[in-house]
Length: 481
Ligand SMILES: *Cc1c(COP(=O)(O)O)cnc(C)c1O
Image (cartoon, rainbow, N blue to C red):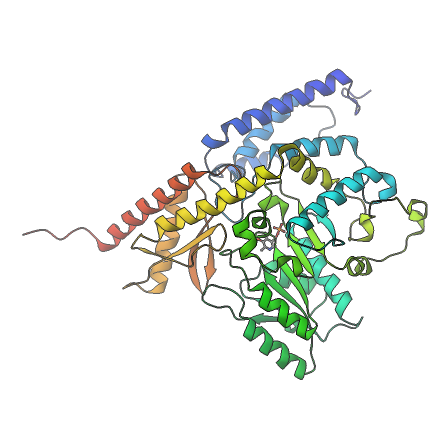
């Protein structure tokens, strides 16, 4: 007999859950005081996990005691100081949803197996389509993230717009487009020459006139332009490509328009964001990342497709062993719309937090994030040592060290040192990127745990460290007299 059978008794299960809940509550309570990152001794902790599987049981307390240092020795991605890459947060409500979803372990890939739960997931997707301004009838799937959504959209557009022999197809994106799109093109079988890069304007938005000229030129040479990827908020700076102009060009030339709104889409929950994202709902497909703008845990992406038949056609397949499972009223068979069959019940993780908190709670957060980025920009732009890349189009503030007398290389080194020093305080965590060949520091406000106090602290730290660095660069003051 094993010393801990796989099915715990009711009492045992409750004890395990209570211990897990106690751990999680303690962890969340201390988040504001945890360092913004702590990877110093991570290698040792990582090495301690490299061991053969135990044959006998381990106490749950001992497991939690091992897990805690592993959790701590990492970037504090769920904390208020996380302003790097694109934060999200990890809503506690979603963790509760996942617990229930895993414990009941229902199969939602085929509607007949859990009709009401498939309907619940379809409803959550419909809500997102509505929030994006998509017309009724828009289809969608929940994915593991934006990268897979982009890949699925690219293949769907390919099947809808190109012949089976598709190698003459060309697609259009800008240098600011997320790298998952060009990778998706490769995964989908396109040669490098099929990916055409359209120049951007001073605010890093795709230039429609250049797009149109390239499409005409490529078509004249015998290529088959079929797809344009429009950024609805780039990862680098939050730039929004001019969707209405891109849509008009695409319609004239028969191109599918895919909007990558992984970062930017949920800003549509508030009026200001909706105005900036005009045209989003008219795109043929939209990538969303609820694990960014809806603050859900990593592993929650979404793809919306206006033409449900196109999504279905891209994923068609026959399986005799599923023949008993056709037709549940009122809910789609998600496996027929995606490349997955068995998967987690992601719908509950999206639906439950919306129902528990109400959409107003999300709108308030999104409005706050826009305002926080704006106020950070207002303060940072006054610092003489740095140049802002752009006024924030959404919630990202990006800046470089002002070149002035120094070379661009020296200025970039100073920007990197500035970021290192700010992060070394461990109250906030910033990340960098490259824009136009220059080192750019980014501050992305998107966690539901980030509020004015922490953003102000970030700006104070940037101002102080920039001042100190500028002082060092000038060297000690010359002796007076
Ligand atoms: C985050 C992001 C992606 C990739 O999404 P993952 O969920 O990380 O796979 C794609 N596009 C944009 C604009 C993003 O911000």
